[in-house]
Length: 107
Image (tube, rainbow, N blue to C red; front, side, top):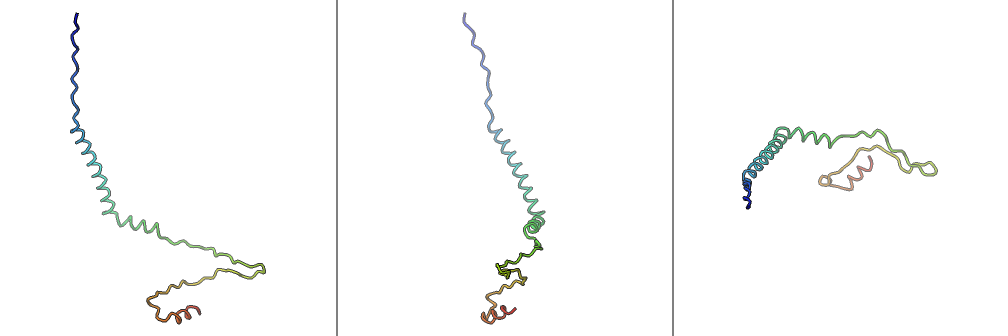
């Protein structure tokens, strides 16, 4: 007795074009949402975040303590802290360097 051949189930071919279209659409939607958020942050709130970063980066710290003096073995000062105003000359404005240096040395 001969057996009848079994029916082989028909397998449908996958539709890669449909999957590719759905994945592409999801990627476009995701990147579009990210782009919209970046645009909102830059255009609507950009100046606020810029000022916030400047405030975080630049601030004044008060240093209440002074350095102590350094003494030699006889008790004389070798180094001490003296408060002075900063002096920064602009080279293009200095016409007579010797006279300007003498003025700065006196006071």
